[in-house]
Structure formats: structure tokens, C-alpha cells
Length: 308
Image (cartoon, rainbow, N blue to C red; front, top):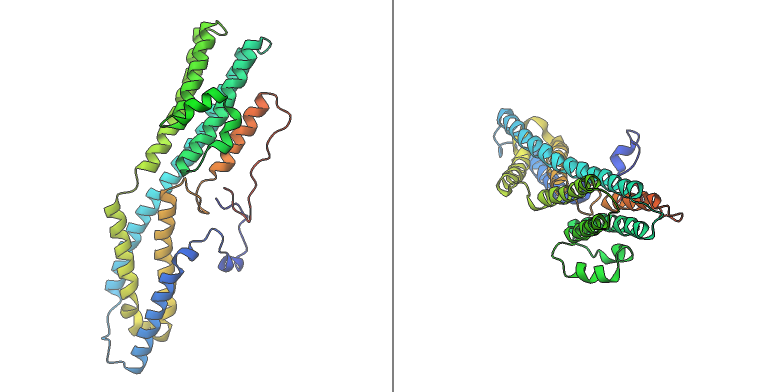
């Protein structure tokens, strides 16, 4: 995610970090070169291209804008839904940890161990979910928060976050059998565990259910076709400035297409994806603070205006 103040108007034209321009500059160059060729052909050989009216090009552009706008909204909804789910993860993690340290007697040795054990697993859950969504190695982040026996169990699990939730549930059930808290509190704690599971399922739904491929293909084909025929449609009225208008419109349409594609999968590592590392580190800091730890990890800071 890009974190920066709104730049001055003139600097807007020179910002590349977070821009989709590096992804589409080749397409823009191609359309610009095409526009140059069409413009100079029209200038030296005016009879080559007939004088088209701008109405078909304008109608085509309006239709394409509607398609791109719909796709952009759908992609942003996925991105925002993913961000809301990670916000729910913060709330559920804090609430579950707060209830553990509030209602389990920390002066009792067994109660204190149960608090630390469960909260460490909640921290591990946040890291494990991030790594599952990004398909990266979770163990450097979670190995210090799980016991050796639990690590062996988790390494055999098909879904690491789900296995961590099972360990938390088993520990709470064991605490109830030892009368460390009441059935009413167990129901409240289980509600928070279910909230964590709901966040996991929602993120998996977003990741595993992409936008319909046929719709994406239609929009991309239409954008390519429109930008390709644009120089031929406007050269009679725009003359030698045809390449400039072609480049601007190509940047707009290709840029919206590329941005929509990035936002549609919000859990990746590009500049416009969600800062899952920073969010999971926030959960880690908050929960260690609840445990009373004095030495806390440093928050993740933006590097060159980019927060991961």
C-alpha cells in the first residue's frame, strides 16, 4: 500500500511509486507510435484515410468507459472487503486476548500458562493467515509462538491457520474442564474464535473466487481494440496532435484495466495491495502488550512510501 501525502499538482506527473505506468508503458508507446504513423501518413497523403466522423469513436469510448468503471468498482469492492476482514481480525484478536487475561486468574500458575499459550497462538494465527494468502513460508514468524509439540502437529496440517484455531479451542476446553472459567465465558471465547475463523474463510473466498474471466477478457479486448482504432478515427480532425491524444486515452484505459487487475487480488505484494505484514505486526504488538511484555517488536514502517 502507498502511504504518502497528496503531492503538488506538478509533481503528480513524475511519481512512479504506486503508479500503474510501469505496467503499461509498453502499450502506451505502441499506441503513440501508431498515432505518429497515422498522423504523418494523413499529413503527407491526405487521400489515404477517409474523413470519419467522431461519433462512432465517441460512442465506443462511452461504452468502454462503462465496462471499465463497472470492473473497477467490482475490483475495489474486493480490495475494501479484504481490508475490512483484516480489521475484523484485529478486533477479534484483541477481544479474545482481553477476555483471556481478564477472566482467567493470572495469579494461578496454570491460568497464567493458559493465557500466554492461547495469546501466543492468536499471534501465530495472524502471521499464518498472511503467509497462507501470500503463499510464503510462515515458520520464521510463528515458530517462537508455538511449542515444539504443537509445531509437529501444525507441520502436518493441511491449513495452518485452521489448525492453530483448533489448538486454541482445545486449550480453552481443557481450561474449562479444570474449572478455570465458566460455561458462559467459554461461549463468549468460542464466539471470538469463530470470528477469527470467519475472517479466514472470507479471505479465502476473496482469493479463490476471481472476477469472471470472460468479463475480464471482454474488457481487455475492447480496450485494446478501441486504442488501436482511435488514431484512425481522430486523425482527420486532430492532425499532427493525434499521437498526443492517443497516448493520453491509452494511458487512461490501459491504466484503469491494470489497476483493476491489481485491486482484484488484494493479498499480493505489489504497491497497491494490502499491507498485511504491517497489520499482522500490529496484532503482534497489541497482544504482547496485553500479556505485559516490555520489549515489543517495532511497527512496520513505510519504505519509500510503500507499506507492506
